[in-house]
Image (cartoon, rainbow, N blue to C red; front, top):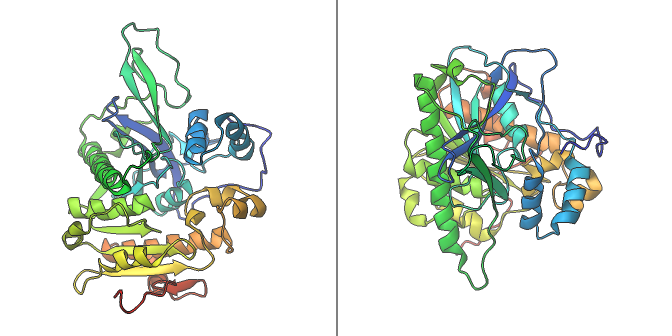
Length: 406
């Protein structure tokens, strides 16, 4: 990892625009496959020459992306390392936490075939605006991440395989790294039972991550399986746990809705270009929190929008906007890290400047969060975006729904 020659130094993940500098760290609680693994983004104190973490932590994640994209591992690793090997996340690794009252909390759920670091532009921006963001890596027998890992106990201390990720070494000498990769559908396998099971597991992982944040905030000792210089105890009593939101992209958007049904501590949800298929519609009446659907122009289709519309309510706020010129991959970081030719060939880039697109999405998100978390901030300056009032936005959807379907 870390191809120093780089592909194009002008292609980079944008830094946060808010008033706070941003730090990040990894937290694994429980070393088994049933444990919780997340990337934590938070407002941090300024430091000289901060270390910026690699965007893709190690080569196994490239292998996972290759499997998900049905590419040859050896070839794709060379391509991915050339394109992305030198890319960094614009957040200071293990930087000291910045105490400043109580920060609201966001749990973030990644899409199918992704992992915890691929939405860093969104997470960094939210942290820079004064949120603590926990980006979960889905792993509990779920196999919806392109790659992830856990540890198993080794019989003889000191004989374990060395971890692939330099930033993910276990604290215990008798733990051995085990990798899990994305599981494609088996021949003749019916998809809905698998995806529905996965979305329920994903929601449980998000809720467990939130429980860990509650423990950290209350001052309980939380043991990080990974070697880490970040002191979790500095975050004691720093979170506003009356103001918690859930956010996710694609399969992560479905996870948002499943989570809202399961946990009333989550006060609202932001669902980015949601893939509704994994959800059982029977849960829809149980979702009583506000939901904001932010869609791309090119991904959605009639059946998916109809399922979103089934969550409409005369009582509970539901909002939907569509960003013109965007594709499904306009939300992960890939859109910033590929040139126009490769980006459009691989459908990682839309027709709109990705900085404009994500800026609209982030500002609309912040305005929605201020409104429904009852925050005293200035994000309401972007309230018009919630209603799709911008030259690059469409109120609701660009998909024409037949009257008979309604």
